[in-house]
Length: 339
Image: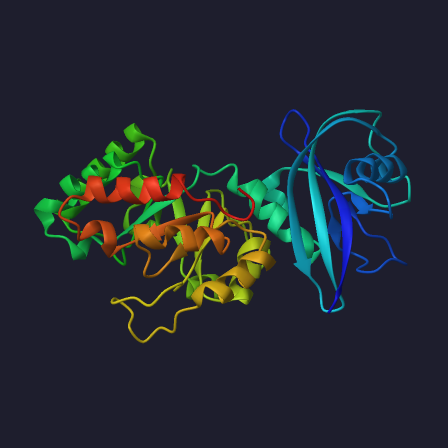
C-alpha cells in the first residue's frame, strides 16, 4: 500500500480576494509547478504547528489566525498525500519567497490556468465554486423542445424554483416570435438574478452581456492563447477537455454523462467512480449532467460535483417550479468534497 504523507497547506487570501501561490523551484520534485504554501507535518507535530512553521520558513510570515478548512487525500502513484487545509486569515510580515521561489497573488479565476500540483487542483475548484451561486442549479433549454406559447411561462416557473442559471441552446438566429420571447426571457432572468449562457452568441447578439457556453467540439477548435471578454463554461466528457477549459479561463464545466440518459441512450455513462476521479484532478468547478434526478443529487455531490445541470427533468415536469425546488432542496442538503 502507498504510504500516507501528512501535509499542512495554507490558503492565504488577501482582503481584496487574491490568493497566494508559489512556484516550485528547480531541485525539488515537480519543478515548474505551482502550489499553495505549506509542507510535511513532522512526527509528533500537530497540523496547526506544522502550518505555522512551514509558512515562517517558506514565506517569512508569522501566522496569527488560521481556520481548518478540511482534510483531503490525494493519491499519487508512489504515495498518498493527506492535505490538512487551513484558511489563513491573519498574519504578520510581508510574504516573500524565502527559499528563492517565485510567489504571486492571484485572483481565483487566474489560478486554474496555471500548472498546479495535481493534489492542489481540487482546492482551486473549491475556491472557484465559492464564487458561484451555492450550489449551482443549471437548466439547459432547447427552445425547440417546448411549444412556442409555453416557453416563457415554463421557464418563468422554473426560475421561480430558484435556478442559478440557464444555458440556451440556439444553433441559428430565431424567428421573429421566438426572438421576442427570448429577449423577454432575458429581462425576466436579469430581474431574478439568473445568469444566461448562450452556446451561439451570434444567434442572439442582444444578450451579449450574458455568458457563453461552449461544446467540447467548439473548445477543441479554439486556439490556445485566445481569450474571451465574457464569462464562459464548457461541456466536457474527458480529462483533456477539462484541462483545456481550465487553461483558457472557463468559470465552470459540465461533466457528462454521469448516469445513463434517455436523450442520449448510446452515450456510455461515466459512473460515480470515474466522475470522482476526474473531479479530483480538475481545477474547475464541475456540474454533473446526465440522468440527474433529485434522488441522485447527493451521489453527484459526493463524487465531487459543485452543482448539477438538468434538461428534461425540469422542462418536462408538470410543475417546473416544484421540480426545480426539489432539485434545490436536494442540493442544499447535500455536500461535495470541498463543502
